[in-house]
Length: 132
Image 1 (cartoon, rainbow, N blue to C red):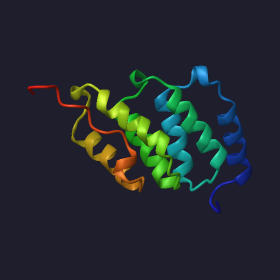
Image 2: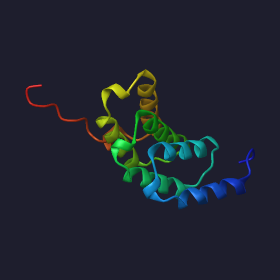
Image 3: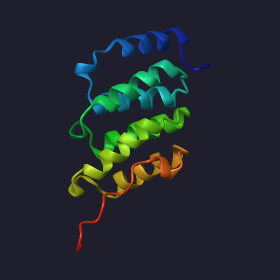
């Protein structure tokens, strides 16, 4: 990190790890992860904490933007977290169709593509109802 103060990032990382899981929301987690990934700040324990916290949140706390931001942040950081991407995939599958627009679709597909995880490790598509 030649363009930022390493000690400031270390402090922010420590504070982020101390945030109570009960107060977490998907948008804040995705913004923290995305900011650190953009700065190329490597902190595997922090990304593990963000992943575990995100996985503990209900699908209703996510929207297409937070799914895309979180997925792209982990991909950019080089954190290939199969469990997190599986949960994000599950959240995509239960989002209301009206919550997606062209940009959110592109951003989510980009996140999954950049994750470098084979598709077979992600959740299967929902079963087609009989007769449908």
